[in-house]
Length: 293
Image (cartoon, rainbow, N blue to C red; front, side, top):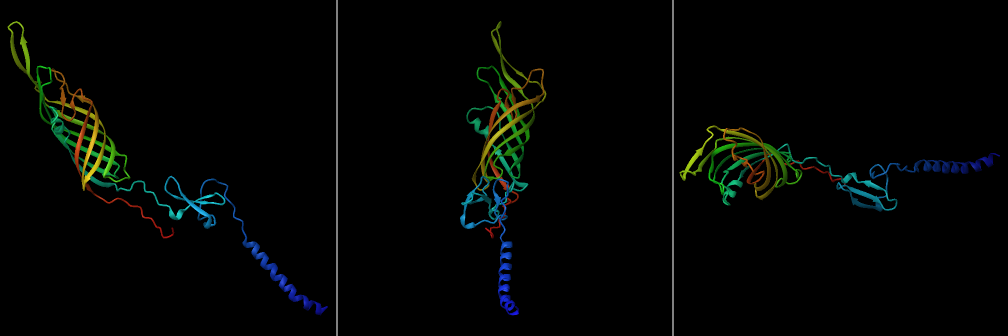
């Protein structure tokens, strides 16, 4: 009996070794559980065979890995580019401009306006507080009328804000909309009013002068574009819709012309500016670590 036990001892040892090895092997084989939630899964949290992956891009520019066997999709987090809401700093740039719309329109027969200058502070290349200051005047004899309306050179001021729709694009090209509030104080008069005496058949000329200053406030809605032409120099065009908010009255009525606004019966005007831009800070360029891509 002892001899038989000695003969079976090596066999038992081999069987015991094989049984232990099978147990360890069974413990190492873990079937991954596929999450029940839909959509693309994270490639770092799910073990996949990268030899059967294909790539595509989503609407945000991220790389999506597609398992060509199972059809499952995974976001490749090693290649994701962090998105910055606004890449330009708070104090981005200062732009100054000269509006030459009125001088240009005078070449085509306009009888009023002189011009204005303005300054704009760029916040994130998105919000643009604006201040404008100019001088307006008129010396016009309307066609078919027997008088000349005059207003000497008078200052006007506008304050407002522009919104740049291309705020994360290059500031060299902008499409914007804005609003302004304008105010002016001025004097006006009507000269060479022709009066005909029907009885004596005589013609005389008189002047109507209110004798005091008038003031007016108005708002403007602005839509325009900016285009870089060379270095820091740009050109800009804008259309303006405006309406009078308040104005003083005189015993002789209201003024036909308002500095910075134009003639009373004109609701739409324009502006054409030559601009110089001074950058204040550099844009925030996202840093991407591609060492693991």
